[in-house]
Structure formats: structure tokens, C-alpha cells
Picture (tube, rainbow, N blue to C red):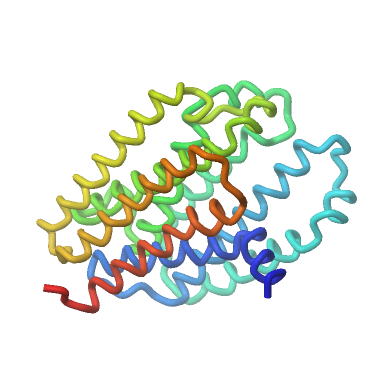
Length: 281
């Protein structure tokens, strides 16, 4: 069981479930049902994206630059990637999809890959400190809001816009926690993020501003039909995320980040589902 759990975490299966859970949460907040095939597509898409990223990263920062050695050391990653791509293709035929959302998600993913591609001409991108963090948070917001809602980004209504902004701010908090963890490695590789760009005090202030904005957006949702208990649930998750950021100031292990921090996404979706199902008044 321990090895299976390790496999699920290390090959991004857990975080893919978290993406599907956040997409389900979008439907809950909007009061609509999200197709199981659509949720499965998002699961497989995130699974494929993360495994592709890690494979490219290992290839780019290895000393050999050999596909044969990469396959020899990461055969399961290739297997998961191919399986995820096949899963995406299978799910695509079972729901109506908005082409613009798929194109934007694809472009964002390619942009996120650029700093780790093994081309000297692209090294200047690594110095754009905010790109890595903000781009990833925005990509997550788009994938877990616009794709489940199946509306173009320019056609979002008021509530959808609030859900999108709230999701972006929530994911930005999580991304900064990971950036802080990767600060040392990023500096060695010449990559920049918000954690390498700003001093700790400024980063703390930025976290506080993002947190306040997240709480405010959650409160605004109440005026568009989101239940107050769901607003409270979202706020609680924000508080837990803030605590996790504070705790991460001390050195933490693999499980803290890939199960604890990533798990906040799943926990957020679970709490809003529970709040929507039950009345605590």
C-alpha cells in the first residue's frame, strides 16, 4: 500500500484527482451539474500535463540529454503519460467542448514549458520571475472553471467571473508555497519565481494581500446565490492555506507538499460539497 500511495503521488495521479474535484466544485458553486466525462477529461489532461512537464524537466536538466536513459529511469512516467493522452481522446467524444478554452489551455501549458526547454535561445524567459507562478495559477483557474462550465473566457457571467478570480487567488497561494520550497533549486537552475524574486518580508506581504482578496471574492459570491455555508467553507480553506504557508517556513518533507498542500484542493471541494448538502443553521 505504501508503494502504491507513493506511486499515486509521484506520478501526479493525486493532483489530477484534485483538479477534477475543483472542477466539480465549480459546478457546485454555479448550481450546475458537470458531466462525468468532462471531469474525467480534466483528470486525464492534468495527469498528462504534469507527467509531460516532469519528463521534459528531467531531460533538460540531465547531463546526458538522452531519451534512452530518460526512458530507462522513468518508464512509468511514459506509461502514465500515454494512458492519460488516450483517456483524454476517449472522453473528448462524449461532451461538447469549447475550442477557445482548449486552445488557451494548450497555449498556457506551452508557455509554462518554455523556461525548462533545453534551448539556449529561451534562457532569457527564466529571468521573468512572475511568469512561472502567475502562469501556473492562471492555467489552473482556467482548467478548473472555464472548461467545466464550457463557456469562453469573454462570455463569463458575474458569478463565473468571481469563481474564476477566487480560484486564481487560491491557486496562487498554493503555488507560492511550492515556489518557496523550490527556491534553492530554482536559483541553481537559473529559474525565477515570486519566491526568488522577492525578499521574505515582501513575499509575506504579498501572501497577505492575496489572502484578503480571496476572502473578499468569496464574500461577494454570497450576493449571487452561493450559500453562506459554502462561503464559510471556502474561507476556512483560505485560513488553512495561510497556516500551511506559515508552517512551510520550516523545512518540510515530501508528504507535506504533495499530499498536504495539494490536498487542500480536494479538501476545499469536499467542504463546499458538504456545506451544499447540509444545513448547519
